[in-house]
Image 1 (cartoon, protein in one colour):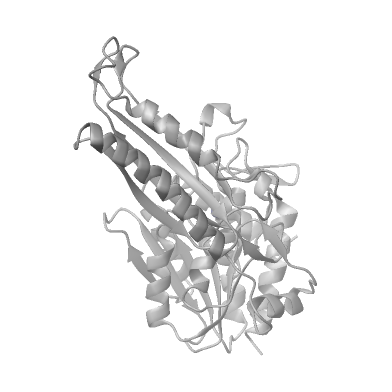
Image 2 (spheres, rainbow, N blue to C red):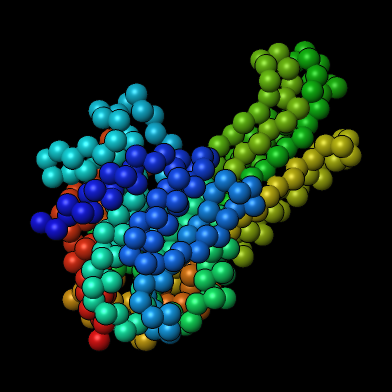
Length: 375
Ligand SMILES: [Zn+2]
């Protein structure tokens, strides 16, 4: 068992509450100090508000041919009273390490950091870069800025491994996500006077019903685009016609062409309601913000996928059902796969845990990467 150091680091990472809406700077400072002990400088990419930062660092010579080990530092919220143990205190029992983020994805970060002494001892001839983002959970928001900075200051990179939980299988494909946050402006009135009020909730409900008709449930759920309205907020009281309503749309798609078709259908629905409301009163209407997480697409022969398969002795790659920052790395031309410890079923859950055996497997894989970068 080689996981003792990993568990020490993981205990520290879990204890620092980096729920996405909070600052992650304590965790960033911990990693900076940790790396500094091995003489490794790191570079922060701060958020606009200054309360969060991504961080990347290079171990070994800063030349072309590097491998990037990438993960996010933020975690999803925890309903602490529903947990058997405190979500921010690592609890090791029966071969599992419990705590918020153990699977998604501080377990991987801990393995990367625990491997740093091995990287330093190995006389790397090519670099290993560590890249840790924030605000992944709200929609892969911060990674693009970090990746752009890395791309501008680092020599060419051969392979990016995004360590999201795949049970240490290599994933070469996942859907992309189009996210829209929609705000409907209606006109408040007493609920007895629908003749003078315009209900934002009614308008939203009509659009939501139409949006769900875009999906074709007869097709395979793994490959067809899927649509979800995951949040609706609107109105103020039972006896008031709602003046505003907001809702969020998430469209997951595999192919670029499907994205365009469905984006057009979604916008047609929003624009039609916007026009109808504006005909009633020009101050009313529908507006929206768009956010986009690119898909991870399988690459050709020279890719990270083939190299990593050879390295770890795998012969298959899987498709994962969740979005990651991997497509954002691909967008700057870096060959990217997803492979990390733990299983996605345990992510975002009450009593989140990771099997310690998974952490050991991740360390084995990183040791192979270290060996490859030392040749
Ligand atoms: Zn994650």
